[in-house]
Every structure is written in structure tokens, then in C-alpha cells.
Image (tube, rainbow, N blue to C red; front, side, top):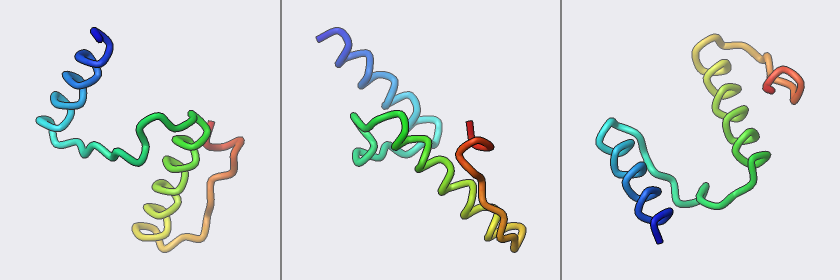
Length: 61
């Protein structure tokens, strides 16, 4: 129970600092989070740099 309260407190603190809580990513594997992070970086590269450079698994870790 204490862990649940701690988790909720961390989520609320991050929300108050402008972060978004994505329930879809609660309880997923670390690899799933890495894939999501890499997708965000690739989207940013494409959008901001007009580049077609993609991070490979070895570059993103």
C-alpha cells in the first residue's frame, strides 16, 4: 500500500510540473518504454530537422 501512495504522489508531482501521465504506459516493459522514447526522438528528428535519420537500437541505448 505504501508503494501505491508513493507512486500516486510522484505522478501528482510530475503532473504539477507539466508532465502528462499516460496510463497506456503504466506497467509496460522497459523495452516498450525504450521503443516509445525512440519513436518520439525519430519524430522530433523528422519534424525539426527534416531528416530521415532513425535511431537504431544500439544508438538509443
